[in-house]
Length: 471
Ligand code: ARG
Ligand code: ZN
Image (tube, rainbow, N blue to C red; front, side, top):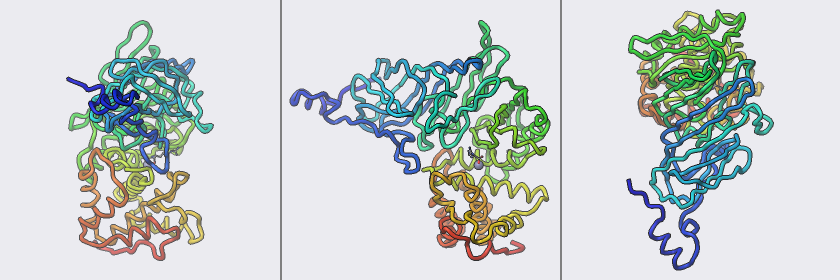
């Protein structure tokens, strides 16, 4: 394939003016992708199509080392570009040639290739690195969970900077091969299908493939000592669940929940259409946190989620995200309701199906629990701000908005909307306003006011969702 390293115009300019071509009409890629909630997230000037991570991790020392190879394409005439990354880098190559690089701030790696990269060029970036993710603190914080037997990368909105260089924003999705070598007796868990597992010289390499577009925060790595169960769905998808060997009293409840993954996914398919990815599963590392995360194909669950017995509802939440969040991702982080409102509402639908309270009853309950002066109503699910991105209001008021929609358009139309949306935006990105437009189109009703009331007003809507029995 031919590749122009220098644009003809730039060459002429450099001859005439004796300034470097890159300075003439090639410019640096922006250090952020333009998300007002997180200005440093993502970068401009290129789009990544594939990440290949070949790593080695030593649980005793927390040392992670290896090579990331990114396949990308430039979207402008590029003199230099940034990756989002925090660990120590020893070498960068761009299309085989050594590139200059420097860290700027906690999580930016600025790369200057020897020559400018014209718009539309296929670019291969190799980054060699090593470091201890638990020691990388950004604003005093690390997304890397150190465990007695290893470590885990699982956090939202960002986790990648602690373990691989990326264009760290859901707008730039890519496929992933993650291959990690760990001491024999330890496992490395990631997204998608386990392609191979092989041992030599005391180390076992686990190679995973996630072959559908995946946002960087949904890439996960867990190293530790796990009990693994495997199965296949009736459609032939591989199912792989991993449970830390140290779950203690929570082990039974964790299994009693996560082993229902296939059943839950089948039920969700009746609501949202065909499951969008190449594998199913979940994992429970020995972490102290209490949240769960919809890491693509293989959600992360904290042991604490199972402290009171089985919790199929949390499995419903994380699997619903595979459609709402992972296949259809936020366009910007302010659109978080297109993920969380629907994942929470899916839990209400599960409750309805299980005879533990209908969605309407749960909506009435949530509304009644929150008096008008509760600060809960100050949070706007449609634009909560970065500090409230995961506030309970995004989830519960977000689900109330969907109950209001259901009552407005009736069950047939409501469920047609819920099923149509993940097909319309499959493997893409969408905004809250796109959902409002879509719901209006399918229902043929004006819905701007309803959504404004439930998603954008900093106060309790006057009446709860109106019940229309019998629809
Ligand atoms: N998307 C995740 C969930 O709702 C939220 C994770 C938020 N992170 C946190 N540390 N609480 O399943
Ligand atoms: Zn969620």
